[in-house]
Image (cartoon, rainbow, N blue to C red; front, side):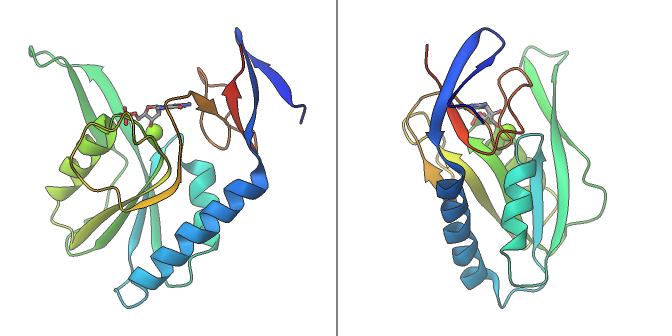
Length: 180
Ligand code: 5GP
Ligand code: MG
């Protein structure tokens, strides 16, 4: 893939090459392997669409028996004055008593993951942790701990490896950042 690419109206250049992403995924997988090896069949819950590539690589590095599922956060305008409401779709079976690991592409302000955790908590799992490919510490505004962060970045807008710019760029194997 070329070094500078164009998606819609913007140009992007490589910020994190595939090898570095792979090393970061390996490191976070090793931590999860150590923490969960004695827990009964943990459940990885990926948040679509952004987490599909991260989940695919992460799960290959997991050494215990685990289940895997994907959910989507549906956004729509609520009828009340509270404005935007997000609901979780795609989780069919019960997660009661299960050890859940949420797999996200990126945690920015923390708004999305907050909704996600609150929804899952109501279903009485044994535990919930979050594993995110990227974490933006300067924009995170919530107090919940984000246990597993493969990489931390500044406030720059990135695409690739599952992340999109208006639906483009998800298939890129490297991470790109806006260049102009
Ligand atoms: P939050 O709710 O934490 O503010 O934002 C989470 C969502 O914003 C992510 O799941 C992602 O869809 C989007 N997002 C935040 N930062 C970036 C970024 O740098 N690049 C892309 N492609 N999406 C981002
Ligand atoms: Mg996301």
